[in-house]
Length: 228
Image (cartoon, rainbow, N blue to C red):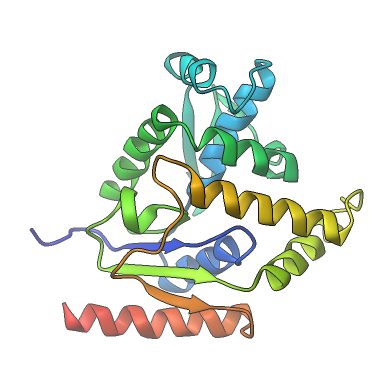
């Protein structure tokens, strides 16, 4: 069946620039952007608020029936609400990144959010970034890209981002170590691990700036569209 909506999947490890790239790509293509990682961060925040260990599958999954995650678009901008409350920017901390990685390892959590992500994708032209968009969430989309960069470069980018936000409490080495730990956790989780889809195009951004990556993706998307 012909796909009705344009859904562009950007997967890859933490700090590869997926979110920034996805936002600019969506803006240039005049479509919406779905930050799937923010949805996992929201569930991580729910676990913290409830005093639940994010690694405890039973307790985390027990929270889901009484949890509501909503993605709201206003003037093309996305925000995440948790149980009716706007949780931006509370979910954007380094700590919530680690919570997100922990809760994302639980099958119930992924099933809960994948269903929501598919529903949003079915109704909208989207750029989605995450870790399993092309392999699990939207395996049939023809627009799949795996965005990566060296660990050193990704850590430098994340550290610069934290400094810009005024979060200078962690050293560069601490940020790098946390990122390596998250890479390991994401790649080794039993359910829907971080992996590159067989039909995804790998884009190494180590030596590229954001504009170069976005221009590359637009050209690649246009090529795939004409090949369809």
